[in-house]
Length: 438
Image (cartoon, rainbow, N blue to C red):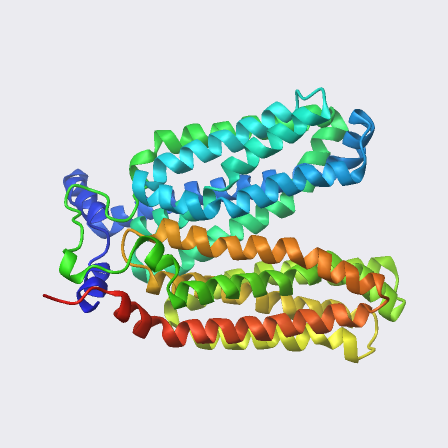
């Protein structure tokens, strides 16, 4: 194991090889490396932006699509379920594909499917066709997390990887936030078909830019000088790695994190109105505070991650803050706008732990296995995010709005327990899985 981690510190062979070849063109190798990393962060970031933009492109159009195709909201919700669940569950097998074929070509194929699927939705003349295209777009959406993390791990210097993970996560949240604004802006001047067609065209333009700059997008172990670890010191791989204790605990962590955040995202407004009889505007203000708190937390977490490598401490503080702030509305009755501060604090806690989370996962991943591990673990977030609306909606139907906040806080504490256990067993369990030295 020590040799594996030493090899990781040697910083991607493909990247160093490329830096050496361009050294004669002027400028220091460090300066050229930083320029290359900016391109990597920019390309991966804009791709992740489009992924989340597409994820939320349909919901703003539901009233128009309902009238156009004469369907119910349940049927439109089925289209989103096909898109979200397919894109989430397929991340696990796509991760294996990333490690086998290389993240770059998988990313290109996924972005193409995603963009083309959304573009063709603009030409759909029947509901069943919209459903088929949602499946195609969801298939394309499944590649981003496994491919992106494999490229970032192979292209970014370890001492700047925390900021890169933070920028990646931030770009996704930004894409989701911009989707309703962008889609409805086009609808205002044209129609819903133009909104989807133009979104698809933008994604294809991003794909063309990625292809033109494809040489900067290096996966782990890329380059002529890259070599595979010797069998005697290799790490667990394949299903044995996926089913190891740390990976399964991180999977549980993602499920619990998704359950905690899913309730606050979907039902903060309804719960505050039912529990404290406040107006719609201050209730929406609390939700807005929560969402902006996440964004601020992600940025702060990225700055902290590289300079403060004790990621378990960051996770403990962040998730404890989530639990305390999320539980607040269930136990106190302040003025309406204080809820915005409480929920903003909860959002900050949810966001600040994300770069640390990604670096903790990377620490347990042997070189060349980022795609399968990140892909598998992110399935947990899709599971948690899919189950959360059912649970919290049931609580509201039972007229228990306070429990929405209490249960969210409870899931945050359970997530803290899961990540603590994952951190505790990681070195020992991976050592046990590694084959004996000969």
